[in-house]
Length: 244
Picture 1 (spheres, one colour):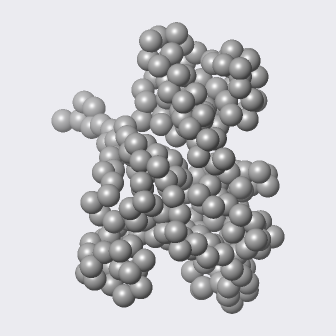
Picture 2 (cartoon, helix red, strand yellow):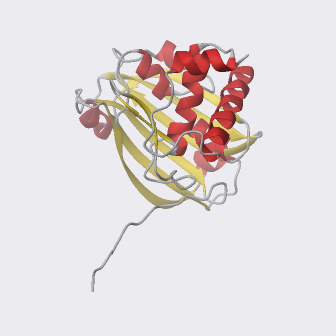
Picture 3 (cartoon, rainbow, N blue to C red):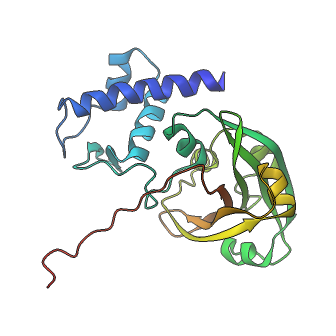
C-alpha cells in the first residue's frame, strides 16, 4: 500500500512538473489551490499535497504560509545540499525505490550532544530510531534519529517504516523549518561497515544535523552515514557578481 501511495505521489508530481515546464504557470505565479488541483486530477487532497511536497523538495515551487504555492524562478539543482529533504526523497530522486532494513526503535538515555540539542537532561530518555535505508534493495545510508518522547514516542517512530519522520513531526504540529548540518568524511569499520554491507575502511560521508521549527525549537537530531559512491550532491554557489 505504501508503494502505491508513493507511485501516485510521484506520478502527480511528474504531471505538475511537466505543466510548469510547458509554461502553463509562469515563475512567480501562484498555483491553483490543492483542492482545485485535486479535482482536476480526480485524486484526494492528501495525494495532491504529497505531490506538491515533492515539487517543493525539488525546488520547482515554494509554499508561502497563508498565501499559497508559487512557481519559483529557478528550480534547485539535483541533490542540492542547501535543501533539507528526507532520505526517502533523496533516494527517489535517483530513480530508485527506497526501502528499510535493520530497523529498531526504542527509548534510550540521551547522549550528551543529543541532550544539549533537544534541551533535555543528559541521560533523560529520548526516542530513537536506527535504520538502514536501501535503494532498490542496496544498502546506501545508515540513519539514527533522536527526538523527545513527548514529540514522538518510540512506538510512533517504529510505525514510520519507510516513511518520513519530518511528516510525522508535521502531523504533530512540529513542522521542520530549517536544519543545521555538519558533514565530514570517515572510514566505516566494525558495526557500521556491517550494517552498510561494505568492507571495513570504506569511505562514507557522515552528516550530523539538528532540525528546528520556525520558532527555533529543536525537534530532531540525526546522524546519517552515506556510502560515498551512492549519491552525487550539488551545491549552488552564488557570486561574486561584479567583484574586482
